[in-house]
Length: 193
Image 1 (tube, rainbow, N blue to C red):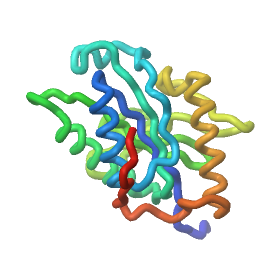
Image 2 (cartoon, helix red, strand yellow; image 1 turned 60 degrees about the vertical axis):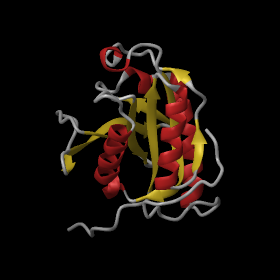
Image 3 (cartoon, rainbow, N blue to C red; image 1 turned 45 degrees about the horizontal axis):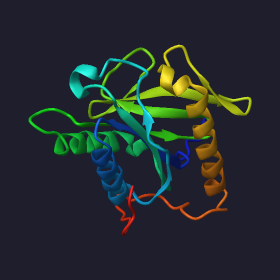
Image 4 (cartoon, one colour; image 1 turned 180 degrees about the vertical axis):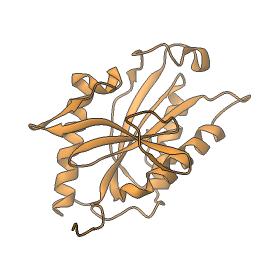
């Protein structure tokens, strides 16, 4: 018989893209106000792995990744996805999304993204949200799976996520600040993105 234990805290991350750099910065700021200080924000980079979003967003999309200092419980992912969906709605104009926000979490063994689209490798969580097993960690690195989006399978993203994972492991050991659990609210006074 197994002895169920509470899940270990995980590191909240998000991928954001938009054609408007200012709006992208506003979205990162709003996420930080909600989930606490960001301890990693990637440099802006072109998001050109797919043309799937061109009709909705247009071309020349810019992407940023962000990771948050305070750890979360993995069971909170559906509520986080619902909140980011609502934020996308608040930032839309004339019924058109202007920013895409994909939250997820990094754990010791994998990277999970939240999605509203079910599929064979996406178990249902609740409230219309599924967990997408995007990368697994073994042999000292992240590895893509047959369904992993090409941008997450790339060497630069895997190297970035590995650095974030190193910080996360230190947090779990209590060797850095920010090891507490996020209650869902926080502020970042005066921080600019």
